[in-house]
Image (tube, rainbow, N blue to C red; front, top):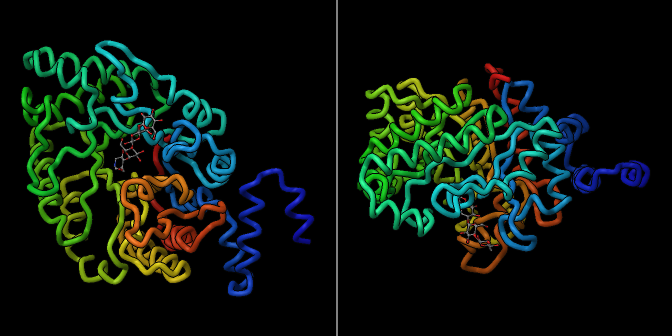
Amino acid sequence: MRGKTVSSDPDPSRREFVGGVLAGALTLSVGAAAAETRPLKAVAAQKGVLFGTAVGNDTPGTQASSFRDPRVVAIVRRECSVIVPENELKPYGIAPALNQYDYSDGEPIAAFARSNGIRLRGHNLLWNQTKYMRKWLVEWLGGVGAPEAERYLRDYIKHVCTHYGDQIHSWDVVNETVEPATGELCDSPYTRLLGIDTLRIAFEAAREAAPRAQLVYNDYMSWPDRDEKHRSGVLRVLEQLKARNVPIDALGVQSHLKDRAADYAPRAKVWKGFVDEVVGMGYGLLFTELDVRDRDMPADIAVRDAEVASMTRDYLDMMLSYRGLNQVLCWGLVDRYSWLEEDKPRPDKAKARPCPYDDAYRPKPMREAIAAALEAAAPRAAVPA
Ligand code: G3I
C-alpha cells in the first residue's frame, strides 16, 4: 500500500511527507496521523487563520533561494495560503538607483502566488537602518533637505504599492526601527532629516497608495529579559504614532524564538503584558517570521526537535489566544534555506534545525506543534478577501 500511494503521487513533497508520517506511525494513533496529514493551510483556515512562509528567489545554492527548489515549492503549494518574498521586495532589492525600479526578482514569486490562489504579503517598504540601505540612497539623502527626502519616500512607496496593487493584502510598511539596546528610534539618513515623522510619512503614503492593504509595523522584540528595552521602545513608537493618528493596523511580531524552551514559561507573563498593551492600543497582531534558533539546545536531534516543538507550541498557544491574530508566517519552511544557519551557526557546528521541515524535506515535530496549536485555537474573523 505504501508503494502504491507513493508512486501514484506526483507531488514530491507529498511523497516525503507520507513517508515521514509512516516512519513515525508507530508512535501515533490513527486519529493523530490523520490530523497531521491535513495541510497546515486547511487546519488554519478552519480557524480563520492564514498559514504561510517566506520564500527566496536568490541564486540557487545560496541561503535565500528556497523558491528555486521544486521540492520546497511543492511543500509551499500544499501547506500555504500566504507567502512573502524573503528579500526581493526590500528597497535595496527594488531600487538600484534614484528613481529606478526593478521588480524582476519578485515577479516569479508574485506570479506563483497568483496562479496558485496564494495570498501575498509585502516585506518591506522602509527598513530604517543604514546598513540595509543602498549606498546611493545613503549618499543622496546625506546631500538633500527634509522636503526632498519626504518626496522621495512618498514616491517610492507609491510606486511599489501601485505596482502590486491589491495583490498584496498586507505590507510591512516599516521594518525594525527601534534600537534593541537602547529602545530609541534608529538613527538613519531618513530620521536625521525627518525624525519620527519618517514613520508617519511612510504609513500615510502606504495608506494612500494601498488603501485596502493591512499596514504593519514589523519588529523582532521578544520575550527574553534582555529584550526589555526593545519592547518598551516599540510600545513608545506605537503610542506616539497612535497619538498622531498614523494609519497602522497591526504589529508584526516576527517571532524569531531562541534560548531554551524552559526559559519561556517564567517570562510568558511579561510577554503577555507587552502584547496586551499593543492590543489595548487597538493594534492587530500577526506572526511574520516564525522560526526557532536552536543554538543553545542540545545537539541530539530528537531532543532538540522536541524542544523546538515544545517552545513553538507554548508560544503559539499563548499568542493564538488573541483573537486578532489571524496570520502565521514562518521565515522558511525547510531547514536548509534558513538564514540562521548562515547568520547564527551553532558553536558545535551541528546544523541548525529551526523550521518545520528538515533538510530531507520531511516534516518535523515543529510542524506537528504548529498544527496542534492551530487545531486548539478558537475560531476568529478571517483576513478579508
Ligand atoms: O545580493 C547578493 C546576491 O546577489 C547574492 O546572490 C547573495 C549570495 O548569498 O548575496 C546577496 O545578498 C544577500 C541577500 O540576503 C539576498 O540573498 C545578503 O548578503 C544577505 O545579507 C541577505 O540576508 C537577508 C537578511 O534579511 C538581510 O536582508 C536574509 O536572506 C533574510 O533572511 C533576512 O531576513 C530578515 C528580515 O528581512 C527582517 N527580520 C529579520 C530577518 C532575519 O535576519
